Image 1 (tube, helix red, strand yellow):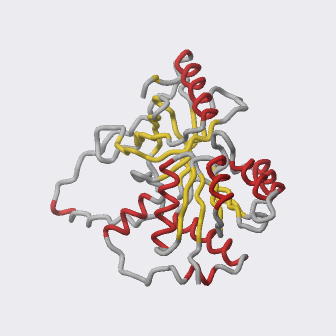
Image 2: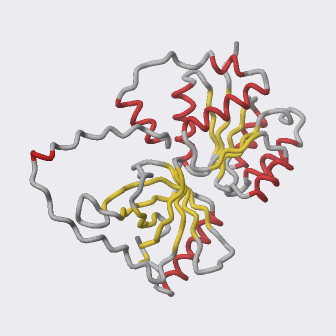
Image 3: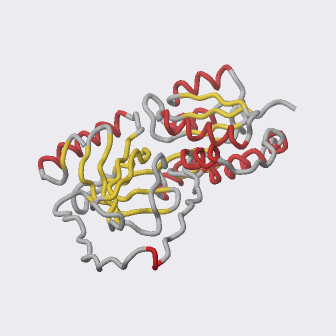
Length: 297
């Protein structure tokens, strides 16, 4: 039985790597090709056959929606499963994709398990699930390498906590004063979407490369290398919202103590879409003029 072949289309190398790692971890024999935008994907589809297309929405030259519309107009591609992988999760965009003939939808950020579930579902509809499962590895014991991969692919890696010291081993510490929240003033507010949930955040600094964010510490703890989406808008009642894809490059305590109630995150952007970069440039200029945050993070 021939190998299952998948085409991964995304302008962000980090996102393409996440998808490829998840697929190869679960299906080592799978064949994967990649394209940086819809135009490159179109060229690959014209000369090769694929069992599945995993495609981003917002890309330069040709968007995912334009590629989907073109695929459904080709006789040889009408029945090929097309899964949109994007941060555009509002009803209007989902409906637009459905009307264009999308097979399924994965919202960013996604976990490895969510991606694999969608892939299996798509393959079952075309009768290629058996071939895909034959490429799955045998169960193996978990190790450090797998834990690192889970963290990189946005999975929920289990955090092993060290045993707490006995009360008798150390004297009781004096009660610490209540931590004060960082003064937000006119700083821009945003929302950080992680595979495990959403976190409101304050934008402390912003550049075309990364953003410095403040989040309140809670049950949902962000992890380094975890993929995420930053929903960002400037000012109250702003209708335009930027959905910026990226990953957490660094996580640190905002206060100089181990029980800091606030965390400072360095969020690296991975988008290469000129429209997003243009919007981000305007956002930085407007936010700097209004002293919402520090430029050049």
